[in-house]
Image (cartoon, rainbow, N blue to C red; front, side, top):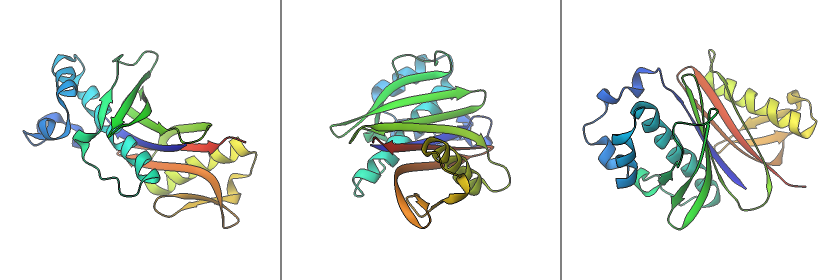
Amino acid sequence: MSVGNDVVDLASPETRLDGLHPRFDERVFGPAERAALVSSPARHVLHWAFWAAKESAYKALKRVDPATVFSPKAFVVELPVWPPERGVAVGRVRHRGVTLALAVRLAGECLHAVATASIAPGAVLSGTGPAGDEASRAARELAAAAVARALGLDPRELTIDGRPPVVRRGGEPLVVDVSLSHHGRFVAFACALEAK
């Protein structure tokens, strides 16, 4: 299983829709996505949910096929129920014949998208947290703690390094696919653990 994630701080000045290039939506979103945006009473949130879903799917597919290119319009997002029920909207992202499962979580001003491409069965872990002073380190620590809990390990035994990130124990890579992200006040991760 391959996984990707993206987090958006909805209060960040970078997310102001009036600050985007006038043709941003046309270049990034397909016709169905643009139609959903026009009719949405929560356009700001849906806009960034679509964006985060595309980023997440790209990250998941890039792990499977390093030749994958991020062309946002080529990633087609389907979120049948929006806004999220109980904080989570489930859908899918299609890209050139591949369909990825999608979950978009909304908690206050933190929007977190996780896309998974099923290559093999396994468990998916994900979460968000505060960015603190060093967002990259905070994301790695958050992911390491979750992986350690799931595997019954001490989080101090784990390191996450590289690009794409690799989870290691004692310098040896573990069979864990991990995706890290940060934006504004938030960090996030998603991990796919191989089924035993």
